Image (cartoon, rainbow, N blue to C red; front, top):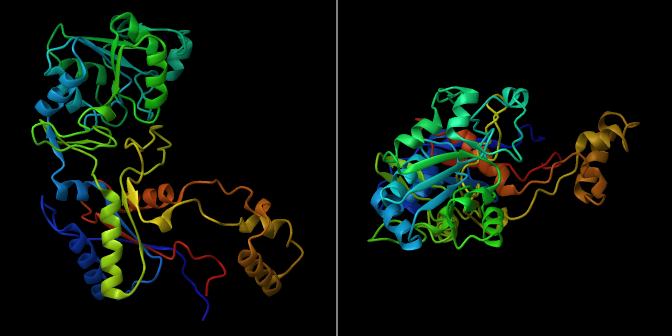
Length: 391
């Protein structure tokens, strides 16, 4: 019988994970329990996704605001500029709280009209009407308020981020400016903490070549433990989330060892060779709020080798509308099967946007598990590598 279903995705429920838990066994046991209860089987090249927060919890990869302050003090000796953080209660507010604990004067520079991932500080149409040039104009907080008013709430959270960030720092210890040129910060201090995520390497390069004397990024803060704290050697504070009012959960470490261990245990228990990935934020954009979901430094910090690269696919509708347009029914289907098996002509992929497999599957997993109370931090994706010709 011909295949009638392609890719299927299941959110797998798991127990609440605590520090020190054997997450490898828990993940595998949760999937095998679900397969027995729901009547499905595992196959070679199935994909198991595990949310990054699950691994970080098992590792106990947490840090306090005082740990953040200590790490900042290791890097900076004087007042510092904090450049281009995203606007987020969960992602940056507690980090700023930790920076403020150093007692240093903070010059906070925010992108406008929106941050790096699309959170807006102002109405872009009003910005245009006022004749503001975001490439050249620098707005002080006072100028910003005089132009846009005292309350500029986020469309979803209702938060005035300029006000919120200022309230996290003792009075007189912070100045806020809106600009898209990081070199503006050099007028105030030569000690610079780059806080953006995806453009951090460029921002660091610009500042260092323009006279910055001490230039670090959030990826350099807590990239090693402080007083026994959690840490991430690759991303530091990037990818961290609020765990409490005074604690952050860091991006997990040693992800590659974890995914390989899960892959091996599944092989031992079922004989199937599956692929495994750790996933965080998906790489998609909200069309209404204009927010790009990806606040983590990467979609997947660790995955098995079979998930490397981009999909090898042809565009079915392209060849059906062109090369095979004069064929009918079974004849066209047979021709399409043959084209899929050959996959010789790269022009047939026209219209297929090249994306990494981990970004695609990680986004699928993130949308499946959500960030609320679904209770499915493990995702099983089956049939992802199948195609129209797969029997």
